[in-house]
Image (cartoon, rainbow, N blue to C red):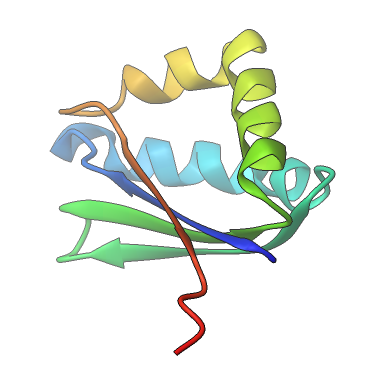
Length: 96
């Protein structure tokens, strides 16, 4: 069963364009990472927030991906562009 991952980011107003350019330059790596089934990125209130809606094979695959992004320095670079730490939520199909 796949896992839905929702990542909520609050960019610094002065960093929104730079952050979106940065994300755009690396998103192909995310889409190609083992276990990533889908990822879409949404802008909230003209850049006030950015929401990643991702579908992963399972939470473990996402955690492997996040560890890789952390080790490679991407998360530190992204964190410098944010007003608050990212909020990451996991959900599985409730089968209702």
